[in-house]
Image: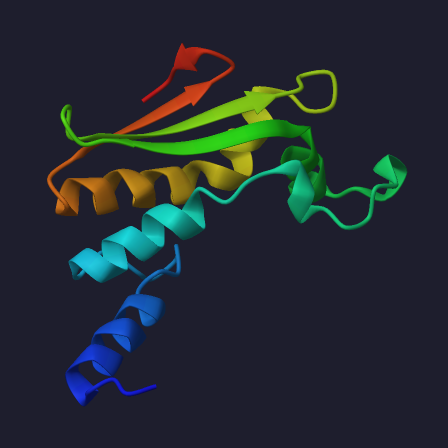
Length: 126
């Protein structure tokens, strides 16, 4: 790939530190990876569309009809804006499986000295 050892090491450290059980932002690269990875929730992630066989992860992902991660450079904030079809899944189910990921995103943004915002169905929650 033409990368020197230092660059490869930074990327490996970022990958190794993005697990929500043990990871944390340790560099700008790791913080960016956390924000991108932990914000990946959307209907397109569900390959099986048989609602009767959904587990909570399928149900939450399928209920997210729109997801946008938006960076506002002037205000120094990053916003995860979600639209959740509450007929398919209550918002509380989102938090049941995404709370650790949401908090990890908040701390990754803090590492970058920016504010993390979570907006669900037009309501700012964080």
